[in-house]
Length: 442
Ligand code: NAD
Figure 1 (cartoon, rainbow, N blue to C red):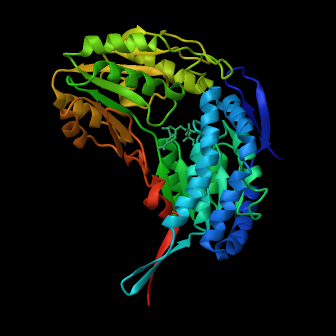
Figure 2 (figure 1 turned 30 degrees about the vertical axis):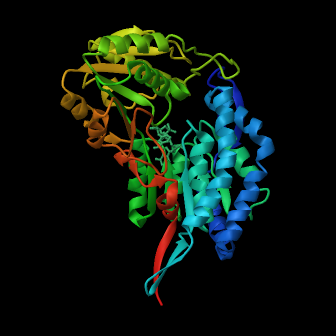
Figure 3 (figure 1 turned 90 degrees about the horizontal axis):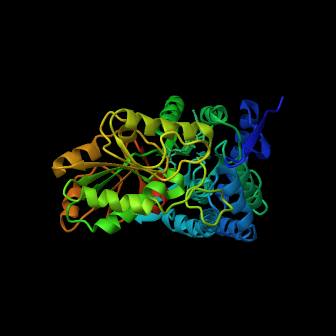
């Protein structure tokens, strides 16, 4: 019997729509179809594949607002941000196809030729927090490289992924891009099926499960995982700028961003001023639904995620931290703008990825302690330092794939250190991950 997956609006709890779940049997069929379709797709020239994808993404343009509305309704993002993501995904698809095409051209290397050959069938498994952007970043280069792709979107945002794939398939050759819906069971069945590569964006725990399931056949992996990004504010920092960044980065996408600031260490000499500035900026943020044009912080994606953030807040308060702004027990679906000072190791707010709109602060007397605490994490996605000239030295000692000095972390390629993953989104190195590098002696 076919199972149904319902997409739920986090604001109202209403059903937005439903899709059929892919079971093991239907996944085997999709993989067989993908394998057959891939042969013709790979026989096209690189330029033909780039053009086919660009044409397919151009057809998405009239649907930008439909895509944006689905993002809002499925995961709660406000209209402005959802539109930005949808528009960015469409333009980004066109641009990414071009960029991947450049990276995947063969080259001569002395007496040898280097070719970038397709790997076969690639599973792209994506999260809900940027449901279009995260899927796009991996499926476009995978297809340009001559692979076929099966996308497994998050169970929280199936409808927007469905519209993306259906529209692209109006012009792409049949079978090279398919979708498999469902939760972790579908993801697991896909990883264990006869595919060649898994390009994954999601949590560290799921990344571990995927690695385990990919190990028997040594399937190729790209892992873009979670983070617990630190921010260090030095005594030489512009306090107002640092406070603005701290709030904006902690609250972006209701804190549900992989590189959102999760914990802040501020020099004790400026800590009072910094906390005051942070609290007064944070107070100006409003929670609200996606249609509310005044809202900066939307609902959390689901009750489980909401409860996790409440647990982290309560754990910190129980262990001695101070609530400067916010509520001790906010009710779903919102977490109001929250500022907490006095976080310590051993608190979930400091040790784990919270993924909610919380500015979590502690102060330091010695910058060595701040660097040590910033690095004392299994994660290493992004890290940020605010300060004068001394910020550069501090940044050189931070263990993260992406580091920002007086600004946010992130760029091209998008890369995590330590258990925040391996492999990249974007850039020459990122695109080439989707190909088997082959050396031919001429
Ligand atoms: P998640 O790991 O719960 O789910 C991600 C995807 O994996 C979903 O499609 C899910 O159904 C699937 N999945 C779950 N278990 C699986 C299994 N055993 N095998 C195969 N697939 C499985 O993550 P999420 O809650 O959707 O997303 C939030 C996480 O993603 C956060 O940790 C965030 O930091 C991270 N993230 C990282 C980046 C990055 O670029 N590094 C970007 C966005 C989000």
